[in-house]
Amino acid sequence: MLRPSPAPAPALRSVLAALGSPTAVREPRTPALRAAQGPLSPEHALPVHVLDVAGAPGLAPRTRLVGWRFLIRSGDRAIAAADTMLTPDGWAFSHFFEGPYVSATEQALLQAEALPVTYQPRLLSVPELYMLTLWLHSGPETDGTAGTPAAADLMVPLAPAPPGIAAHRPYQVADLLPVLTTRLAPPPLLGSPAPA
Image 1: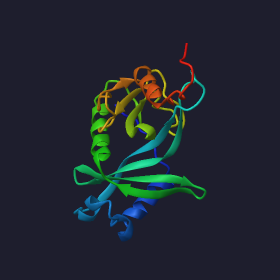
Image 2 (image 1 turned 120 degrees about the horizontal axis):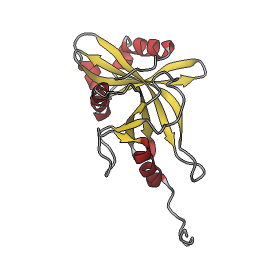
Image 3 (image 1 turned 135 degrees about the vertical axis):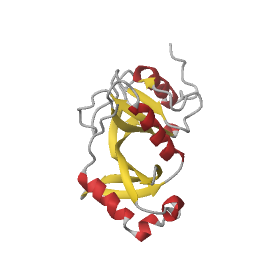
């Protein structure tokens, strides 16, 4: 079961305004929005966090909120997504996009709804690995804009996932984060001694 955090009202208003703007909807990279018949509605607002594993060895990775993502529904399915970002004036529309992560997010949310535990859905991006996961936070009453992955949280990598990581398989944080941290570790400098 999912209990999402409410999106900031200005973020939702900025997406609704962009959906009503012929120039924003007709961007070259969103042909699905241009071709859509009938009303478009923003749904499933998710806070988007970025995983920051750079730091002192042994310290837990940190996350930072970078925006809110709304799936744009036409009829019975999501056909695109809209991202918002925080500006000095508050939340503002950033861009529309489409591609595999739109349907993968919708699929992962449906899978998560069937789980017996209540989670708060978030998105966690790992840009260095070109990876996006549905982060199922175990504290459904907490603020969805803050926090780090906790031991009871699940991570569901969205397709396409990096090689060796199964898409749409729920991972315990303790199982997936070490894999990501290892892959993101800087390579040793040439000529440096091997670790003991």
